[in-house]
Length: 131
Image 1 (tube, rainbow, N blue to C red):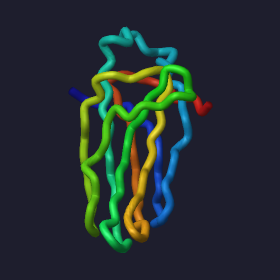
Image 2: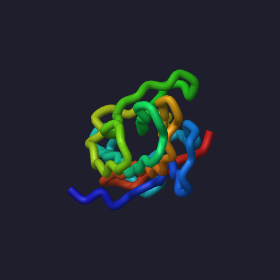
Image 3: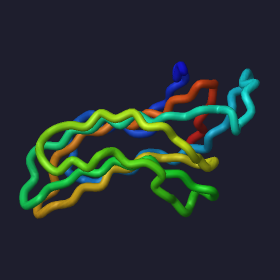
């Protein structure tokens, strides 16, 4: 299956030591999309790094969805980083509401520095509209 339609939900390209919340988006089919919603396959790509921090530092990266744009639920998470290093994961998305966003959450005695990129990919065209 080819996931050639991609949109970036969150990109932290310079190391940060604070939690990050990407923009909230409404997912919509593109005008040329002839695939019914229930047949459209989605995947999420997590790419994150962690360095520094003290006393059990952790970095979590999550894909979240919402039915109303106010109440958010984590539907996929990258493997938690618990030491200096990186994670690169490609996960199938089995359920997705009309709203989507990505977040990072840091913890530890001293928050670690982290970078992150979260990409939503699909087999069919789709559009993201910032809320």
